[in-house]
Image (cartoon, rainbow, N blue to C red; front, side):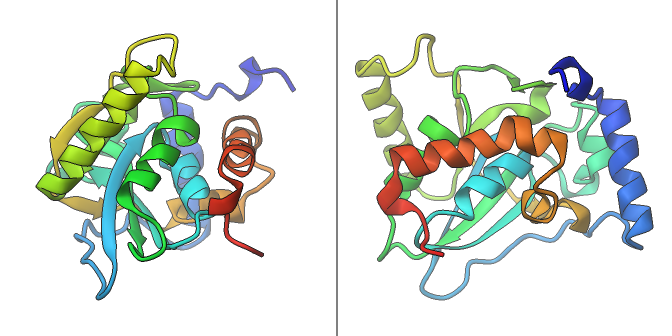
Length: 217
């Protein structure tokens, strides 16, 4: 299978996913903000299609849940068909709930910047293009903002990437859960061409670069 054969246009990708949703008897999920559970903290990160981001962070020790959703726009337009137009202000994002006693926010950012996505791509990631696929850290607290700035400065000083980091750093105004058929997509569809080509290598990179962070099976 060639790379070109799996480069789905936004329209075709939307059509396929909506067909899957109808077949499963599910429609778009309600845009409901997710609350932090006791004794845990949350991080909201965007870096291209949320399938891959979710798949990577679900493998990380100390992470108790990962939810695919939308951040950066209004609750009224937090639905896949509207977000896919690139006009709603949303970014496909993941909300990561984690135990800070096991893993720190900064360590999550290390994974985010170095294996979960390419922070040098502006409004795009892998084959996907549009502002909904932008790289963005949606910080909840001043401490999260400071950590993100520090990590980006360290990576830049170390010349970790061949191009400048373009990740946006913006306050979180709301996180809205994506439709049910998007949740745990990679886990449920490991042989889906998009997952095999673009997301499986990210999980392999996590295991290679951060073996101590990978959950034991």
